[in-house]
Length: 319
Image (cartoon, rainbow, N blue to C red):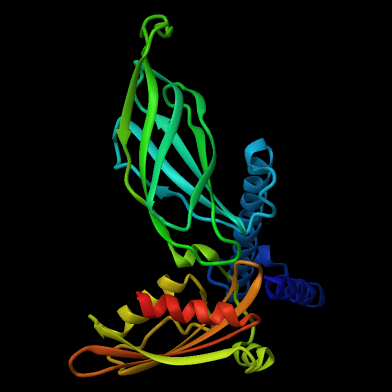
């Protein structure tokens, strides 16, 4: 993103030197299109930073989570209910070094109901490395007014712990008089089954690109390099295999190498990221596909920490 800022400055300097103003260019002018694209990129980057900052402020303001340290990453919302159901719930995964906080965003879509003491009961029996340490219920959830409830888990420091979590929405439901908007004093305890949630390896990796992969690769050095080969089994295409590994690792494709040429029998994909603990990681993937559609892959990892490279190879070997 720093390079985008520098490019905008150069284009503005060009505008001053030539007397051209981007606003004077028509829709079809390349210069004007470039400026608009760069402005859009900066806007997206600014919104991402603001969202991350707001998440950190929100979590640090909750006493139960205030000692978790610096927030590493927040995921995109994951839907836990189908569209147009009585209650709409999605979850954001907030990743810390030793903790994971699930933020359940809830909406009550029934006008005749008020929900109180709303919480999510989480079963972590399929997530052995996680132990629940805190939760924060939602006091009240009126109709069409979103609210949040939280559950926090502790995990071993610095490791890529994965697992599946079963979720049950629990609450007290009170009937609301449509004519007055007043809720009855007495309520009934109720539950609502939500979809399962998974913590995966990609949750512990941030997509951070590099301007020149070759230079970054050589600068990283071979001290903590690990190389191995894997069989990925039959795949629909080479492109499908490349996409699957990118999604598995959660890293940023570099230099357009996520795009595979049609009917290609081999491909090299370059990935960059920052792992939990702010450790820089570079990955080079070399794919080949046979007539039987079996895909083989050579995985090369360079990192500032040998353990991170080992973890990435373990993720691939266990997938």
